[in-house]
Each structure stands twice: as structure tokens, then as C-alpha cells.
Amino acid sequence: MIRLAVVGDIGSGKSYVARQIGYPVFNADVEVAKIYKKSRKCYNKLKKALPEYIFSYPIKKTEISKAIVAGRHNLQEIVKIVHPEVRFSMNNFIKKNKHRKFVVLDIPLLMENKINKKKDILIFVDARKSEINKRLKKRPNVNLEIVKKFEKLQLPLKFKKKRSNFIIKNNFKINSVKKNVKKILEKIL
Image (cartoon, helix red, strand yellow):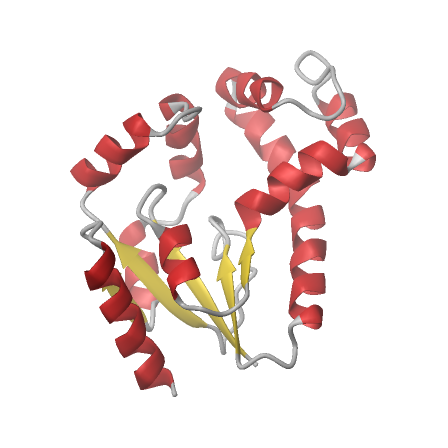
């Protein structure tokens, strides 16, 4: 099995690119949402670590958002508690798909949390910052203050780009992304 990991800036279109590859995708953002809804263990740990922000189960995104906006330390606490559960889910996903030719990892802090392995094929999604900002502003429920806090946790984009095996220029046009994905898969195979 070959692990393809899609990396890039927040809002650059990583999830869209990951879905275009056509193989099973592990989407960490979707997993985090499931954990907030279903993991009482995670709720208990977050309530203990951030009692002034976390009140209800299932955990509400608004409570998490308030905690993140209130301070960088809170974001680090959340990551420290939620990350092991995401990693556990990812490992189950990989085991479940071990007979597939490819699996795709769509994990925003993949390199930062040292989830990637040496053999992983990294695909960097490159998009203009002005286009990303325009698209983020249109998304419902996106708090730009939170986006900035997450950006501070990221490794520099130049570093990620340099470490990647392939770069997809995302101009947010469907056909060009599909063509680029197809070319990458042909090169890998």
C-alpha cells in the first residue's frame, strides 16, 4: 500500500484534491468532528483541561472556538487531547485499507505532528493566498481568528513545498486539478 499525503495551506483545497485521487481518504477534520460528537473520554479530558470553555456533551464547536480564540495554550491543550484519538482512528483506517493500492491522508498538521513516514508520497497543494482568503471568507462557520491561530502551528509553507514529491497548482478550476492528479498517479504507477 502506498500512502499519499496531501499537504498545503489552510483553505488551499487539500480535501478537494484528496477526493479527486479516487482512493480511500482519511480526513482528519471529519474525524475530529466525529470525536467531538461521540467520544465521552475526549469530552471528559477537555472539560478537565478547559473547564471554563467546555460545558456540554456532545462537544459544541462554539465552545472549542471560544477556547482557541482565548489563547494559544488552549489550542495546544486541545491538540494534545484530540490528536491521539485522531491518530488511533487513522491507524484503524490504514489497517482496514491495507490491501488497497493507495490510501490518501488529508491531515492538516500531518508534518507538524510527525504523522508522515519517509515512504509517504507528499502532494503539496499550492494556491494563491488572495484566492484562499476570498474562499475562506465565503465558508460558513469559519472563524478567521481561529484560522490564524492554526497557521501559527504550521511549519512554513516553503518547507512543506520543498519536502513534497509533487506540487498541484490549485487555481480552483475543477478540470486542471483533475488533470494534475491524473498525471501524478501516472508518474507514481
